[in-house]
Image (cartoon, rainbow over all chains, first blue to last red; front, side, top):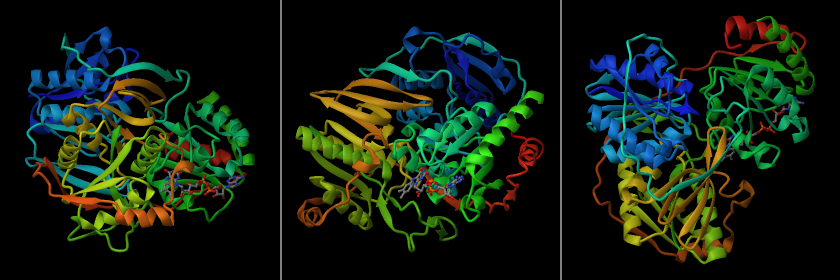
Length: 319
Length: 248
Ligand SMILES: Cc1cc2nc3c(=O)[nH]c(=O)nc-3n(C[C@H](O)[C@H](O)[C@H](O)COP(=O)(O)OP(=O)(O)OC[C@H]3O[C@@H](n4cnc5c(N)ncnc54)[C@H](O)[C@@H]3O)c2cc1C
């Protein structure tokens, strides 16, 4: 009856999202009077999960699972949920988890509720809060199915350390991904992704052209940040679509979002509003972004950003 | 190839989001509705299959009579037939089951849905639909080619993309990239006139189950005002981010 999580990993190491999912699941398990079990795939060192409330790990090692394949992964999560007789399965809101979640929901005859931002308000009936209308509202949702699949919104619950003693056992589910084949993966290994980043530096039309993007990239490099952009910037081909953030692009929920030369249109803000701290640099003091930001600099990006980069380098070297 | 495009009817992105009936219902007063942006990219890709590969394109929506202008717009863009399942969506499973029933009856090879709809942002319907149909599924799909019964798709992943090969029947959750923004079509007069004559059939729901229900809505607390820092004093910004916000 434990709460089951799928603890995501990348090349054998657990992703930060796994610890947030574990923290959240521990909260749910406490409310239900049970414990947390984690499923891992091809991760050899799972001990860190114990710091976030996971008391048992089902460790899968299988070369057939090296590449993420939604059907195969949802099927092994299903088998783990059945083995544990879990009533609640918690996943992250990563691209892969959101890919597998609905397949898992159908297999377990469970409701799937995504973008969840709080622990259950009550467990009987089971009520959680999720975001709706792209962060413009919250919605309380009552889940009536016996088994429930919850996708926790990235960076919403945070990490909560609770040390418990952890035991790991090998788990060997049958692996069947059907006829769909992942042929190749093209992933920049030297860059942090928008989904994993603690800081995102984003550029808009105010940067005038792709040739000026070194400003955004250099600022991102000093901060260890991912780079992003507004929609018109990707539509004009200045930057790849994968960097487009906002209501119709990627959602951003980082600790720090720095917007340079972005006006702050409602569609842009909706998608980045879940970020904890927002900074804007814009020449126009009337730009709507100033109403959404925590910190603002009225100024020309071409003057402000190079200075900011130098000052941050100095700051980083002493901190 | 028979294509079914699932269309969600959603508030325009600039809509004011308010609630009525004790914060239990979305207030549609003064709100204009549009084709869900992710679905519009999918529909436009379907038009390409129609024009280049002779595919037939049907659109389906689960919704009340108020969604018909949105459905007609899809016909004006070029879809051949439309189906409206006459029911107000209750949750993702309900919608997925109703769509699955339409998809099964029509014997479609390819079902195109959007990665998520911009109202409730669930992102769950396309995957559930694929599972119910026992079809292959590609989510966050940014490119799709079909040759005979085999499809090559590109899926966006965190920090990159991957190429997938899958046989039909296939369900995708699509988004921008399937086509470019500049490929989107604004219906012309002829399209609008023709759309009036195209079939829009209304079918009754099969009585699918729901597993969850929204109980109430609320809005985020209003934000405090911005702290402005002079462009000549960026040390202060760094100090604030370090000491006050604690994010660097
Ligand atoms: C259906 C729909 C969906 C949309 N979805 C999205 C979405 O998901 N994401 C998104 O971003 N947009 C989206 N948009 C577009 C959105 O409405 C805006 O058009 C867009 O966000 C504007 O991008 P921008 O801020 O880069 O450009 P602009 O609005 O042109 O703003 C540029 C800003 O740069 C400032 N600037 C100019 N020069 C400088 C300088 N030297 N230094 C500093 N600042 C300078 C200007 O003052 C201005 O505020 C959507 C629109 C629609 C209709």
